[in-house]
Length: 308
Ligand code: PSU
Ligand code: MN
Image (cartoon, rainbow, N blue to C red; front, side):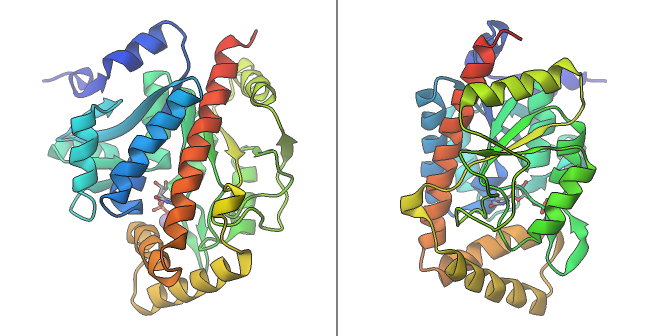
C-alpha cells in the first residue's frame, strides 16, 4: 500500500522557505479552472504569484494533478491547469479531495480545500478573491468554506463574498463557527465587486503588523479556527454597488430558472456576470485577486518577523 505522503508534493522553493521560517502565501486553484476563462485565468494566476513575491513572500498555488497534491505549481503545471478550465477538473472542497486522489483525477481546490492542504503543508496565510457562503434563497446550500474557517487555523485574505450570496446569513454562520472578520482599512464588509456592503466587520485593522498580532494571539491560544481578512477591491476597478446588484439579481434568477445549484452554482453565476457587465466584473475580479495576494504577502512577512 502506497503511503499518502507519496502523493503530497511541496515545491522545492516552497519547502525551503517553510523550513527557514520565510513567509509563504497559499493560492487556490478553483478560481483558475472554475472562476475565470482561459487565457485570463492563466494571466491572473501568474499576476497573483508575482504580487505575492512583490509583497515579500513565496507563492504556493495548490492543486491536484493526476491524483497528486501539489503545494506550489511549476509554470508548466499552472499552464496545464489553466488550459483545462471548463473541462472536467473536479472542484475540490474538503469532501472531494480524497475522491480526486483515489481516482487519479485533476482537482482544483476551493477555499476550504486549499485551507486544509495549506495547513497540512504548514502554511498559515492564503489569498483568494471571494469565499463561498450561504446561498440566497437556498439556506441549506452553505459553502464548506464557512465550516473549514471554523476548524482550520489558516488566515484567508479575500474581498468578502459576493452578493450572489446572502451576506447577513454568511456573517452569522461565521460567528457561529468562531471566525472573526477583519476589515483591512475598512469598517464595512466588502461586497466583492463593490467596496461596501452596508454590513460591519468585527474589527478594523489598518496595518499588516496588527493583523499578524491577531493571528499570533489566535495561534497562541491553539484555537482550531481560522481568521477572515477582508480587503476592498481597488477603487479604480470597482463596480458600482447598484449595478453589481442588478446583474447579480438577474443572474441568480436565471440560475434558479435553469435549475443550476450546488457546486455548479458559483462558476455558472461568475461566467454569467461577465457577460451581463460587459466584462467589467472580470476586470474587478482580476484587480482584487492581485491586490489581495499583495496584502496577504505583507501579512505573512509581518507574521514571520513578529515576536510571537
Ligand atoms: N467566489 C469567487 N470566485 C470563485 C469562488 C468563489 O468569487 O472562484 C470559488 C472558491 O474556490 C470558493 C468556491 O471556495 O467557489 C465556493 O464554492 P461552493 O459555494 O460550492 O462551496
Ligand atoms: Mn455553494
